[in-house]
Image (cartoon, rainbow, N blue to C red; front, side, top):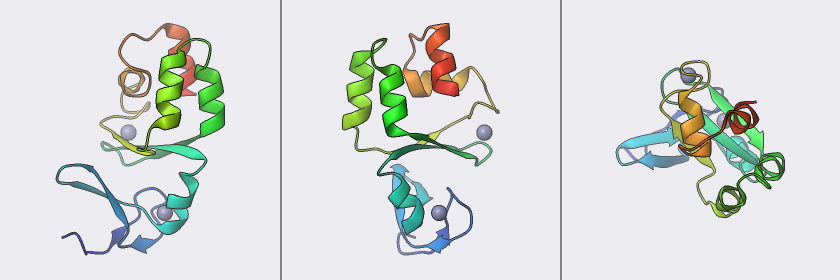
Length: 115
Ligand SMILES: [Zn+2]
Ligand SMILES: [Zn+2]
């Protein structure tokens, strides 16, 4: 079904054949407009409720810088700008922290990442 057309999961408005394979067998349709947003934003997509979250790249990197330099440069270099998460902050407020910041997260970083 790779050439199928699907509803953009980020804005839920456009129908598009553009997609990314978030993991084998799981396709996320992303319209060209939303794909453009990934130039300056990271986008998380909740696989549970379907909500999408975007954060300005610069903001996130500068917030992470200082506390977790390694993580920040990893984010900057990462090619995967759209990440599927199993649960978002609303579905599982604690779970998202592990996805975004890694497992050893302090309370402060959790707030930074979740906001
Ligand atoms: Zn879209
Ligand atoms: Zn959710």
